[in-house]
Length: 157
Ligand SMILES: [Zn+2]
Ligand SMILES: [Zn+2]
Image (cartoon, rainbow, N blue to C red):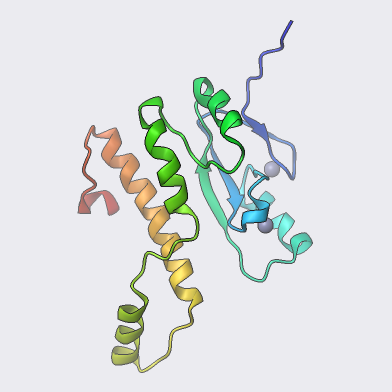
């Protein structure tokens, strides 16, 4: 007889169970994406071991129980499937998610140069892109929760 699993995965650090449809953390470094963490603290603990120069924890949401099987088949790199109706889109979303720069570097550099007479490190685009992704994820959830298909300015407030 098969034992029913009532959690999604276990935290790679403390082994705490991470439930379905639950916020968890992954490392932004692609070779670390196979591990999941219950909290930023647990993610932080792997940092000195892996010797990352720059890394951050990415907030994810585990799949709903009925979708968990699909995730396992798709492999550990597929990031986030929230809902069966979005399954076809989510592989595209997953690809767009990974480390892509969403900030117009030349414009931001020019702005900082003009306004503050300072240079801008390339890493700034990465971290800002990451922040934009995070903010967008929340905004999209808010829009969805209100039954909208359009993300609006107020979703970012
Ligand atoms: Zn943990
Ligand atoms: Zn890592």
